[in-house]
Image (cartoon, rainbow, N blue to C red; front, side, top):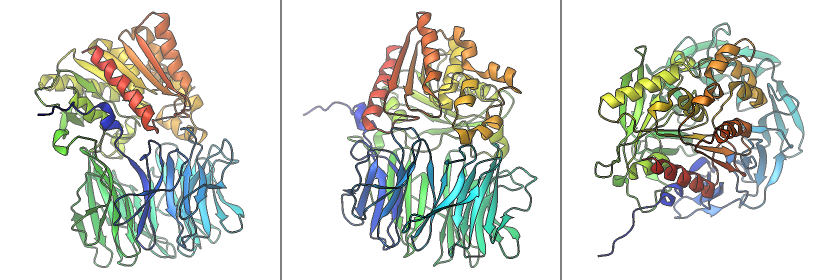
Length: 594
């Protein structure tokens, strides 16, 4: 009998991911961004063939991918080593070297839309307007560019362009609480919703035809719903809502006059189909928990990018909306689905009676080491959901439990709940977490004094704050690019974030006392436990100095602190070898204190 070792951490972190995909007009090929060679590149899969073909060698994360409808080229975008200065490129239809379409050092270009004939690319750019951005278009044949909207008072983003290009829908962001939608048509700027005096968001817009649009908005509602807007009559009407669910991923099938969307509720995704003729709504079964993207091909086939807690990102298609064919087969090397952990969905009452939902991952009893890893998620207006996490799964194989609460400020629980984090980064969310830990201890699912805290971005911020204010409840901490000083976070944020940050984080002058109270650096002297700090050198969201000051202060006191800086990363780990290096260090650090 041959004995094999257990799967290593490399098995988990060499799992393939997919960022984005597109389907060619004939529904014969799919181009997608994946890290098949250890870096993100574009690969093309001929449907029915077992293995994709590499299209690019840029080795950078793609921001989008789009087929030209005439098969002349493929459009994509990427930054450089995580600096988030995205530029737009074209590649030959069979792959190869890229040709820059929109590129300028230090500037950003985001994909907006592509005309139906493929001749005009619409985009959003920071050029000449880094705070509020501009919307422009470029003729891909002549190279002529034109600015259509100059952002004022808040960033502007493009939703969609009408089929005949006679109008386009765009947003105007107002702080962190509103995203108003407009139609630009015949030198008019027509509001999509009935009033801009009420705080609300227009999240997605799709053209049904040149005069009618489908809209996802939460106008006068806690959750977003599907509405219709007619340009000629200026009429806005609600079409369908699903109580207590946030609608997203609006996808139109023009030929069959039907629309698809995802209904999000906390940790769950549900997929729906709406017939536009008889408004019959149908919930669809799917072989994946999370719907990351939907596309409808020219022939009416539905394509999806989906993943689950025990299954990494894969591509699927369905012709009858009943059965799904798996087009890719990404899995963890040497690990069966039955060896992975399905989380338990928990709900507990917080310090003020608010209901908080959480995911709880438990290892097999025979390997349980009794320690729990707290994972405060990033965002903060984000959520832990039933998606694949190689870190959570590997921690379970090493005997750790994982507790991931969706504290106030998380998405998927209504607009009011999400806004509770505004200007209260270190208050309510922190107390939700502490209440969750105490409740979990009482339930016997965790043990007091056997906790670790690991978090990235806002989760890294919360890790630092918990270290400063509740160090006695944890054995050790791992901070992954977390803000340490909210004044620095506000000052160094990307320019087009700054207006929103005044509402989300606070005003450096008007909210000074609260920002001091909520900044982890205020409590640096109380950070007495071992800590590992991880930082990307090129991070434009949480700049390196935020980690430097924490590490320097702890070192001066002779404390146990380790510091890893990744020279070729930003706000995340885009390269497989870097991810393996980070998480090997992270897990070995935790195991040292078990």
